[in-house]
Image 1 (tube, chains in turn red, yellow):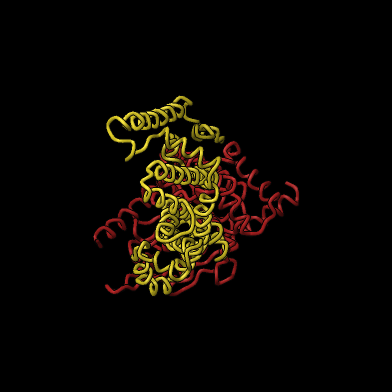
Image 2: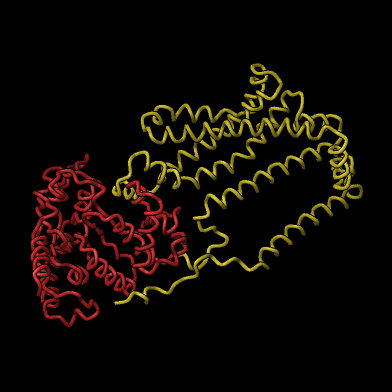
Length: 276
Length: 278
């Protein structure tokens, strides 16, 4: 191994230890006439640069609230979210893929992908170059000029993903992005996401209710409790990459995590159900 | 891994409907027109006296003479002019009011009952007052058309902006859009179908306004012409006026349909929706 490669490896290892995003004791309360509800009860989390973090929890546990705070749609009642050392998260540093496919119906696929680039005042020729590159990457180049209604659900969600990636955000935030897709399309998109992630080395925060998906994709898995949401546990996922998602069930680590975290999650789902 | 297998590529553009369907529609329309006018032509003078309902052939001859030898273009431009002027004014101010009030909850809360009340006034009742105020030339008609068009455009714009999906604006916000960009690039295009519907709906209102204005008191116009011919019991002249008005509305609607196809081509049209869009 030559020296520069050695150095590069050390650097990447170092970078891996560098923290990019921190939640410090984030609390979110909603007050209404009928009293107040605590959605998040002291979330502290440290995300490393380049890490693929997956979060699972029973539905209604405040997962989406957590993301809304992260992307700046909601403010925490107490605590802070610190991105790159700054207390207010710079919206332009976050790529966000929502639950529902969310391409703007009045824009063609290409115009959708270029939307965040437009907001960043990038010149038209450069926008076009970038969007072409990403459309090519996810095999949508032939559909660049189609409107969303002319595309399938899987195509639209691929468009959403590259729209969130094309402006080189510091972090990519994904809120159950594959939820509404059928099983086959979902598998293909999971693989595609891992490919893109391997290329771009982005920090990803990925929320899902699907434990298989959470283990298959992530470097680390965080389990949230029933409401009020706290962090129940955090599990490193030591499955080597590149991973073959279709064959992960043959992997012992995968199976062990699945049953262990599955029990934890089932417990919380029961608590959450009892609350109602 | 390769992603070649990711869903089956679909036809890029909506396939055009078979030519035969469209031509069938056109043929059926033509047949309908022929049947109605044919029956009219036949019934006139046999079942009913031509004095009451005139006759398509007489009307056609009348219109031809009116265009070639008469004051057709003068009357048309008078009515069409006040209609277009009032329509433009109403559309611009209605849009502006819709945008402003949709962005200020306070202003819309304050003004809401007044707008409902004013919109509740039958405009026909205002027409004589406008004559007193603005005379019998084009101005009172323009204002009457404006009062009708304004509210249609205003309410549609307001409703359109209010009904923009939160997800769309949230997402643009997260991507870093400024308030101005949010409005120009998301809110406005998202509410365009509503606004366009308002424009389409207001066209017949514009014509009604112009004609009522001319009925009440006028020196010219298609409405004035129709009233004069009716008072002379010239049903042929009256029908001729009505048919010209029908053409105005149809022509304006086809113009709008062309605009709509350009501006709203991103919408799957209901008639040509394909199984491809999920």
